[in-house]
Length: 148
Figure 1: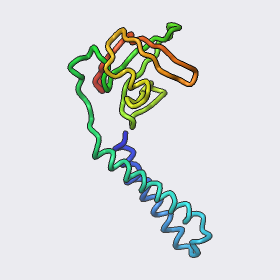
Figure 2 (figure 1 turned 180 degrees about the vertical axis):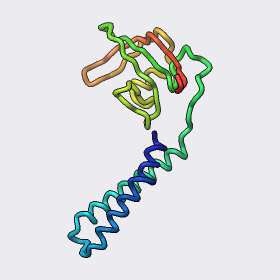
Figure 3 (figure 1 turned 90 degrees about the horizontal axis):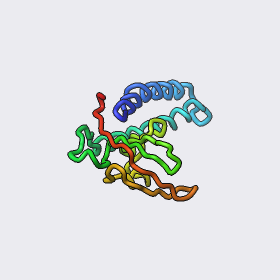
Figure 4 (figure 1 turned 30 degrees about the horizontal axis):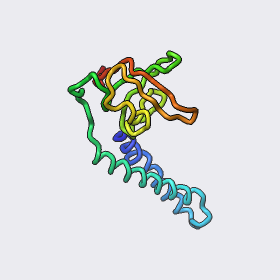
């Protein structure tokens, strides 16, 4: 996803914005030219994001293997939790760049992620939330490859 975003910004969006800024600059007075001013601002935003993505991609390691001990929760695990009311929740532990609440992807750096790391099946975990202490039980742990 990050590589696709970097490609979109660098190869598609930046050339378009650069061209529109160039066209706006050719019109004359730049101090009162909104297209020029906002185009330059957008170029700075794109360049900032491109620098960030480039650095992140250099530092990242893609984890594509399943851990040796699949009976415990580690990075990439799909976890099913049950609360005190018997409601089930499905999560996947991911890195901070992959968080997606709609898919149930939570960061390993989040309070829930930290509480889950290393826990075996049937473990009880407690999380402090704004509404108070919440207790969950680990009822399923699974690891899937990306092709699954």
